[in-house]
Length: 235
Image (cartoon, rainbow, N blue to C red):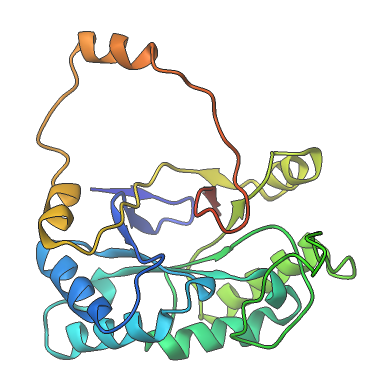
């Protein structure tokens, strides 16, 4: 199943997250996932494993397991690279062995001190305070992201909302006309779990189930940098 973004591009509703996947096992996990039917993979420069994911994707494409056009690859711009969007994107593309990304997200709408491409440092300084670079506006970052689309390096762009939806971010959402979509990104390195997570459309919720779900505590949490939880919105 897939949803259609407002630019007409189809995005698979189930993807595999690669956060905290490490080492040589990544390749086999990715290859197994593709064999099961996963076509959407959620990556990020911050995860520090784009190169390993890229090796798996390259092998899958070269050996004919899957075609590049059938994959939907997402990765994310880290905070310290807001002033170097093009270079950061090119670095991710090189590591992922790709010529273009299907979706490139602003990992957090916070620009922090530049530490070098590929060096995804903490967003906090030695005192634990946010190390924000106030010279780089979110609009500047977004316009640079739009440039990637014009260059053909990226098909779709978006922003991953962090913290609370404060006034600034809400205004940006309204101005950019960003589209909200619900995509499920489970994460597992176990073969059986990969299968179970992917095959989730073979049941229906009854009215009784829906009533029970509504009684569940719905206190929501906002994203904090480094927690892995967030809301992604796409344009």
